[in-house]
Length: 204
Image (tube, rainbow, N blue to C red; front, side):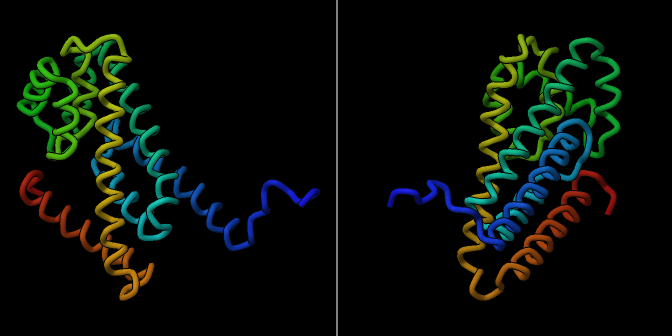
């Protein structure tokens, strides 16, 4: 009909949901940036919780925010390593679970096949920060040569987390509902990090 608005105003409930989505997206951006630079708890935790809380489609908002934060953190380490590689190496070695041997292995892999190294590394527990810190040393330049495979690898990893979390939500939502699903996701991550810490960090 003539005179009807093209865009319908959000209901109070939808407005509240999108307000929370923006908050979660900001946290996802900061978390992913921190993880890409030093923090050792994966932003995947937050992404999976976002899926349980908001559903798959809406959870893509904080997921994309996490992608941007991760790439920005990767840029910081890449440029830092370009200017002063020794200080970056010393800094990265303060992260739990990262060793000189791992840095050398990733550097060799990056020099051979950067896309494969970034893609498969994201699914085998190798921190993204190592790839960012060793890319320039592996003669991956200019910055765009690193960013393109990094974006593909990070997005693939995040989409996989969304897909797995979405499948779990679909199967268990009627039984656990939203709060129960978030508790389940947190429990799974606690168990995962307890195992990971015991095997790789020797802190449990």
